[in-house]
Length: 211
Image 1 (cartoon, helix red, strand yellow):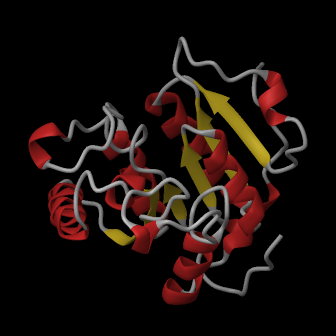
Image 2: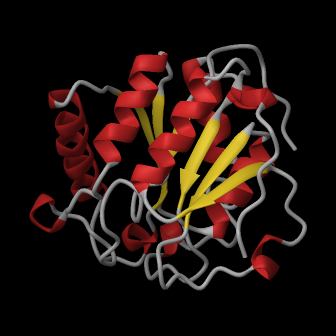
């Protein structure tokens, strides 16, 4: 686990499956469908004064499906949509590397930035003066939770939509404080309780995911 320096707590968001519908290697705004409730989640963080940081694996770049320029152009548009609704994205960090990348420059096994590794969160911490020990992650994959745990985050909210295949076995060996829910509306309520309770995120009560 990586120790965190003093700073501001942040809300970390995965992208595909949390910010936008995960339709597979989305790289153009025409195909980018925002998930219901994501702007409400962002509003909770904004009202709490928490920086919002996106950390996303983007192996589609390494696989040659789209380019870094395509990703950055979409990211700029995405951040504009949040800004128009009153929330600022403080940083977007992505990992284009994958062991099966078609492009040799991106063919790296277990790159430190690729979740479940904590590299992107550590980079964000250093760049934005964040306190990871009081920060929260919202993700829809076990690798999101593992990255949060490996970075020493306070809490993770796991979105396991109805029909999802996560089981209790998937969480074996995990010790991060976490909550499982079915949608972003529920995630917003959990985040609100964490942010506006009498306890800081780093001292929230332990809530284990449902099987």
